[in-house]
Image (cartoon, rainbow, N blue to C red; front, side):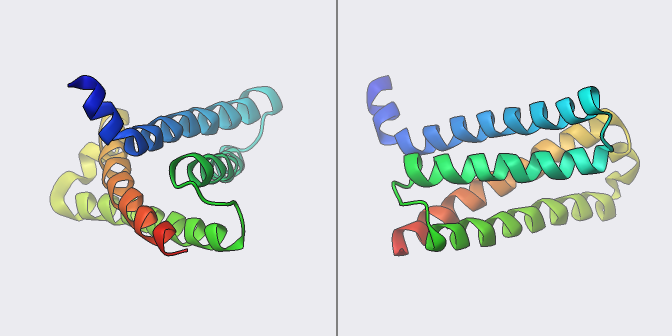
Length: 136
């Protein structure tokens, strides 16, 4: 039974695992830039997000969607990357205007809002990417 579930959801599970590793890569790069090189946190965050996006793009395209890394797959990933960013920001804006502004200004509140925004974006982007990659 467990084996059947793993086989049925293999691509989704692989996407989740690659995404988790990508988040770890993002954290390590950002932390290293700040801790070892005293980089500005905004610069470190920008470099780490872009770096992890390249990592995620390469492995998701090849391993999950079984597509060649090229211009078409790059366009699909880039467009959906910015869609995901917009979704995450809309979740934050919705929470802020929904009366959760004070709670989000705490570390725990921010972490909860971030997890919610990433979770929603993750599900939506996976399905959109799955559909778009099937068309190229």
